Image 1 (cartoon, protein in one colour):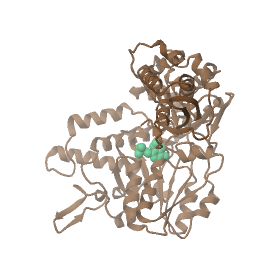
Image 2 (cartoon, helix red, strand yellow; image 1 turned 90 degrees about the vertical axis):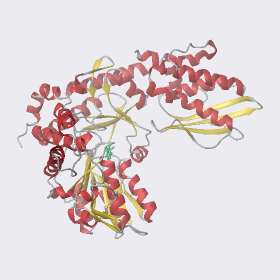
Image 3 (cartoon, helix red, strand yellow; image 1 turned 180 degrees about the horizontal axis):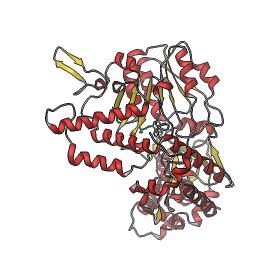
Image 4 (cartoon, chains in turn brown, red; image 1 turned 120 degrees about the horizontal axis):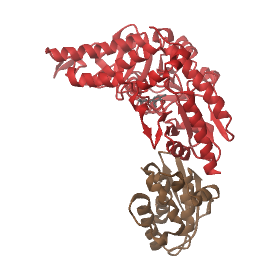
Length: 147
Length: 414
Ligand SMILES: Cc1ncc(COP(=O)(O)O)c(C=O)c1O
């Protein structure tokens, strides 16, 4: 296994310079994610305009995989409808967990995360932000964990 | 006990390492460099063979049968208990209780001693260095009894602040529970002072010896502690077995915490008479093969000699500290004057979990995370650290490989 499969340039870049890092004031929705294994904490802010995710931000510390995944996610979901985001979520889930899944072109830059599936211990690092975004979109308040 | 000194141990390294089958493997295409001994150490062949021999030739239940196998199993099990007694220099095997491990040993004291003696206004004193297993059982007892948990502070080097400890030790303190060696930072706590201070007020002391037992010579009479807890799997023995040493007079006065077979003398529906020590605290069929394996692990360690082990490990600690310090951006967390052989560290720009994955690709096993000591991490304002923890079978070569792997992680992340 090549470490460069996991730590591709796109990932390293988004880890070093995360996009959409920060907070959004109400009425943006907020959700917190927590990975008990790493102790990583992630907060996602989502501002809706009708069915469209108008603005998105994230905050928190974590490993390169979790920060890059959150950063890539914000780029991918901004301006999308809830149905489009749900579709992406499903595609990302397959990408991270199904070794044989073909990588759909619609994933764009998110495909850089495909190396994660070779490192089962790290899948949760990449998926935490997506679960947290889902929580924010659902408007639920309870913190979400990867356990 | 004939022991080697540190340098003859180093000379015998090839032979010693060949005692450990796990160390003979490749991981991810590289010879395993096992630097996660603080989490669990590896077992020598002698221990593996003893467990096998037991399962193949001796297995039966203990203390229960007149047949030969039961007698053989009981002899082996009780022989292991005497090994533990000698290893800790306890006065009597009545003071040696087999448990599942450190965690269960501490819970035993919390549930039996704590619940029966504590009430509103009473205090339990721990330190800011504790593993979760020496925090949560006390929180549970406090919730059940109305007692209060007090915490003695540490300084930036990760040493116990004795003045904070003295200030927290009050007329309401009913028990002091502290680690002997910190698993997150390696700090050795000043347990002699702690015991003296507590005893001056008539307060008993429990020592969590999980991290001390493989490195330090433990003499419970010299330490004068009241309880000492440790796990077999951190002492080159099996998992699922551990020990609680308890001062006989205290154990005698404590109620059982679990009920069942072995812990009784007679049972009727009108009442039950509890068994004598140590069986009063060993309800149900114990982990017989685990105890026997632990006894053999103790023989193995004793043959090498803890002084030699400690000398070599201190050498490894100094070497690792010096070598890791040459890496720019690397910060060692925990710089106590008195430290056991582990190094907790962070590397600027690389999260410990990324480091763990990268080192693993070179066959190097370290621990990354909060080390079940989240309050320690919070004190240093860190979510996690990387931790390399050494056993006597580790070498300076392996530390060189660790350094090289950290540097290549830095190149990858540049
Ligand atoms: C200081 C300390 N206390 C307690 C424990 C718990 O030991 P066990 O999980 O074997 O019960 C550990 C293990 O990591 C430890 O390092």
